[in-house]
Image 1 (cartoon, protein in one colour):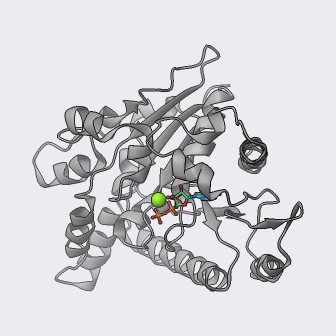
Image 2: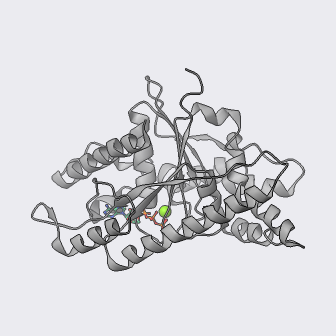
Image 3: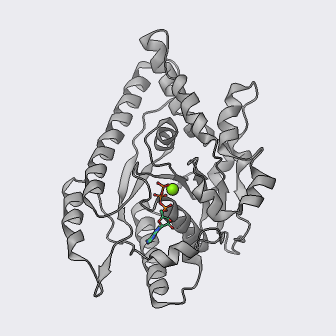
Length: 313
Ligand SMILES: Nc1ncnc2c1ncn2[C@@H]1O[C@H](COP(=O)(O)OP(=O)(O)OP(=O)(O)O)[C@@H](O)[C@H]1O
Ligand SMILES: [Mg+2]
C-alpha cells in the first residue's frame, strides 16, 4: 500500500570524537544498499570524513566543492533562491546500483560547514522571547523541512553522520530524525558521555516541542519524538575470543542508564581500518582476507541485521 512505509531517518551521534560514527554510517549504509535498500547518507560533519571515504579529494574539488555540498545548501538560505536539498544527492563513484533496486547515494560535506554552525547560532536570538522562540524553530527544523521534498520519499533509509558536538547543525539532524544511533567506546568517559547525551537529547526535544505548542496558527510544524535506537559498542578489545573483562563494567553501566544497547558490537582492528579510508568502498563490501578481516565483516553484517530489525525494515 502506498504511503504505508515512509523513509526512516537515523542520526548517528555522539559528541565524543573518534568513536566510530562515520565508519558505522558508511558501513551500515553500504550493507543496506547491498541488501536491496535505497540508502542516502548525509555528511553533516565539517571534517567531511564520510565524504572523503567515498570520493577522492580531487574528485570532490572538481565535482562537488563549488555547488554540491550541504554547506552550499545552508548558505543558500541567505539568498532569495534557496537550493533544493535533493539537488545535492550524489552517486558514490565506486559503488554501482544493484539490480534488485539497492542503491547508495550521499550528500557531501565541506570543511567550511563549521562557519554555517556559527552563522545559524547568530540567527537564534530575537527582539522578544516570542520572536526568539520562532527563530529557534525556524533554525532547528531547516534540515527536517529540506528532507520533506518529494524526491526523498524514494529512499528507504537516510543516515546522517553528525560531527562530534551538539551544535545547531547536529540538532538539525536530530530534529529531522525518527531515530538516533549512538556509537560508543566501552570506557569510563564514554559511559558518562552517554548519560549526558541522553539528557541533552531530552532537553532539545522538550524545548522544541514546547515552542511548537506556542506557535499556534501555523499548522506546519509538528512535535518531534526521536527514539534512541541504541548504543553500539565499537572498537571492543578482545582476548581469547572474548571482550576483555575490563570492558564489562562499562557495558553494564550503560545498560543501567536505561538506554537500549545493541547485542552486536565491533572489535577493534586498527591495522584494518588504517588501510581502508580513501578506497571509496566501505569495508563491509570487501571480502576480508585475513581471519580478523572476515570476523569484522561478519560483525558488521550482524550489526546491520540487528539495525534493520530494530528499525522495522
Ligand atoms: N572497529 C575499529 N577498530 C579500529 N579502528 C577503527 C574502528 N572503527 C573505526 N576505526 C578508526 O578509528 C578512527 C575514528 O573512526 P570514525 O572516523 O568512524 O569515528 P567518528 O566517531 O566518526 O570520529 P569523529 O568524531 O572525528 O567524526 C578512524 O581512523 C577509523 O578508521
Ligand atoms: Mg566522523
